[in-house]
Length: 300
Ligand SMILES: Nc1ncnc2c1ncn2[C@@H]1O[C@H](COP(=O)(O)OP(=O)(O)OP(=O)(O)O)[C@@H](O)[C@H]1O
Ligand SMILES: [Mg+2]
Image 1 (tube, rainbow, N blue to C red):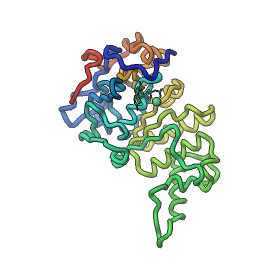
Image 2: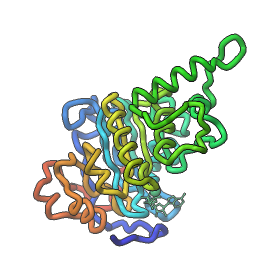
Image 3: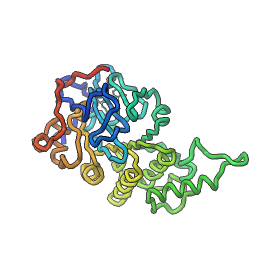
Image 4: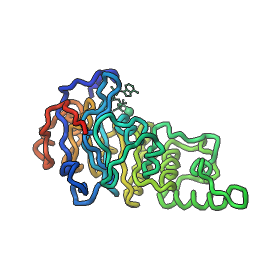
């Protein structure tokens, strides 16, 4: 697979931008493909780093109870996109709608306030603290002037059980002693405990072996069954095929294709990631193709 330099400036003519999946943004309430209002809708979102067009005219719907796989080669803009959703890099262009209402995410706190939880690859867990302490960090319940350890432990156990996490022996185990898959589970459980409605996972299986990967994929399915929306970044197309409901392909900062998993196979995804087009995807495509010239980032 070709790997464009991460420092490439985004050529304004690379590929063609994907069209919105449903009606224009000025016709509220915004409805997703299946008639449901999307939880999150990106309309013409763009983000520049100086001369680098990291994201151009991104139109994407994310729906409750669905897993959206965000794929693309190195430097395609995946991390930038999720950091925009997470409030780390506010977009320069376009609009973000949450349950149909325009929102401005200026900080991670804004995103967390809406119920957006991002699980980054480094996971940001405190190795020296145990599972319970990590899950409640900064939000510990207090009873009689002391931390309510009993409630915390009970809630931690319940949340892990709800996610079918069975491999953790004790919630009093320090997180530093956990396997990669178990650490992912704790980070996801923390998001669930905080009542996240959208969980974004940045390459959750990248460092994992076969068994642990299966654990994380099961975890993603559990999130879905709890009617939580999931965006998962992955370079592993087997994982994508195993767990995604929808696929969104980024290339050179543009969304070159988005649609239900059934419209893709691994080969078409690779073609889209590397060239921006795919014969198979084009033949199967039921969603509108671009009506906009590439690079014409919509500025709302
Ligand atoms: N903080 C930053 N400052 C300047 N340029 C940046 C910054 N972050 C990302 N970029 C640029 O934006 C583009 C997209 O990068 P991004 O990290 O989003 O890609 P990615 O799809 O996550 O890649 P990877 O698969 O390698 O993680 C790249 O050209 C990158 O160099
Ligand atoms: Mg990245």
